[in-house]
Amino acid sequence: MRVNKKEKGFSLVELIIVIAIMAILIGVLAPQYIKYVEKSRVTADRDILETVYRACSTASVEDDITDLPRAGDTNIAVNPAGGNHPNWSRRVLELVGVSDFSTGVESRLRSKVARGQHIKIEVNDANQFTVYVGAKTNANQNKNGIVVGFEADSE
Image 1 (tube, rainbow, N blue to C red):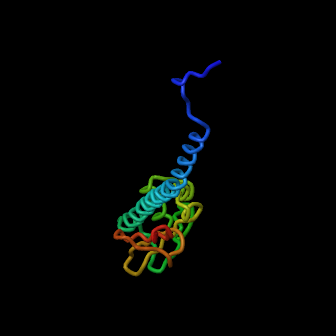
Image 2 (tube, rainbow, N blue to C red; image 1 turned 90 degrees about the vertical axis):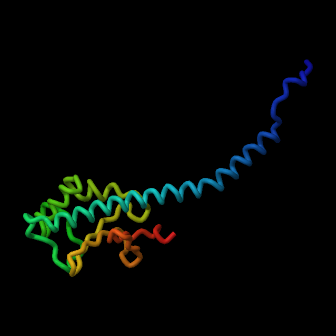
Image 3 (spheres, rainbow, N blue to C red; image 1 turned 60 degrees about the vertical axis):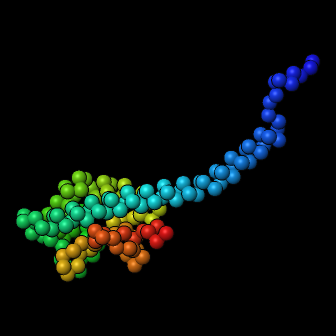
């Protein structure tokens, strides 16, 4: 049987070269893609923290809330069932739109640093709230007064 020269295909060497080029492209592009995915997760987590920050601030200025956190309070429990500030905590949960802080808010944190961590809330002498995840010493403060302890911020 004779092979017709018009029915050419790709040789094994040509296919191997194409596969090698694709592998190189994937090797170069995959780390960039992963970095962008993590950056978007950090941004989403920052939005969650900003929502909590605004809820804390709003609840603290409402007239019917009398059990406000005091200056120097750290790790304020956003827990309507207990803690030193049950009415304030309950109102924060309402404003955030969840019934349980750990399953409704903290479980939505997706970045590497924040996943599985607890959100920390502090109040200072000027009754300004600080909301952060991770180590506060490594945190960067943004224009909204939210401190986010993401190591990814420094990259």
